[in-house]
Amino acid sequence: MQQTMIDRFGRHITYLRVSVTDRCDFRCIYCMSEAMTFLPRQDLLSLEELDRLASAFVARGVRKLRLTGGEPLVRRNILWLLKALSRHLGDGLDELTLTTNGSQLVRYAEALADCGIARINVSLDTLDPDRFRAITRRGDLGGVMSGIEAAHRAGLKIKINTVALRDVNEGEFEKLIGWSHGNGFDLTLIETMPMGEIDADRTEQYLPLSLVRARLEQRFTLDDIPYRSGGPARYVQVRETGGRLGFITPMTHNFCEACNRVRVTCTGTLYMCLGQEDAADLRAPLRASEDNTLLHAAIDEAIARKPKGHDFVIGRGERPATARPMSLTGG
Ligand code: SAM
Ligand code: SF4
Image: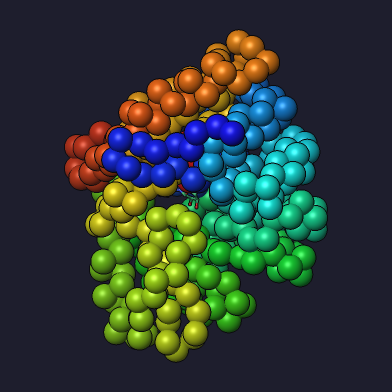
């Protein structure tokens, strides 16, 4: 039995997010630039290596695994990895899930449910087809909506994630709440984080959720509830709809003191904090030998340096907190 992972601030690491590819079929304006270049395919870990790596973390006490990206469902043969990882469910692992932009869900919904996935997060910033295309630069809202319906039919629980963007979707939150809750989906609003160079000005995009919440409270009654989904969101129940609304507020209120997460990229780089550059290479120890001794030693060393928190600042003239975009580390 391997040691569980506890950092120097006493935080237990029980949640691993795995970015299985940095590639994506969308180019969301807050996530990456139009001319984004992706990693050469030969740099990627194979699916077998990703399985071995994620399984090593499960052996170290990770109870929740989230596949993300880039767009996880554009990685070839992704179902193989999901099926392989599902062997840990009920045997150390409580939850296997993924975050997706929904573009491939029509094709994959049933198979995801068959892999033991119970809940998924779907990112959706607007219900307006033209605005959707403008935000994603190439996405088709109709396809995503059909995908969400397919996931719903397949019995997957759905949480919608919406990045709050000033002047872009800020007039739509009431509608998104009505639509999500009307369909039985949770909805979580997210503040934009300064990660990677994008073409637009983040200061212009940034919308503090403290302001959004105050506005929503003029229309809805929001009751704080202790519900947690294992991530950083803090939830309220909307009395008028009966549904749950989450707020992820890295900018206005960070929750780093309760952070239980680390992230690994498709090249086997471990990031101990979403908002810091420090990282540990796990690909070399993974490939160095077939047993995991070196890998576990590298994990121990990395967890011991997990920083206290991020230093996100959005303002005129500020550089991004990290050079890498969210699509490399995964949301
Ligand atoms: N492609 C998938 C998707 O969009 O759901 C998974 C990866 S995406 C990087 C994960 C989440 O991060 C999405 O909900 C996306 O909206 C969010 N995201 C991307 N860039 C962000 C940023 N700079 N600040 C806040 N959230 C961001
Ligand atoms: Fe792709 Fe997700 Fe980034 Fe949008 S947020 S560009 S869908 S990785």
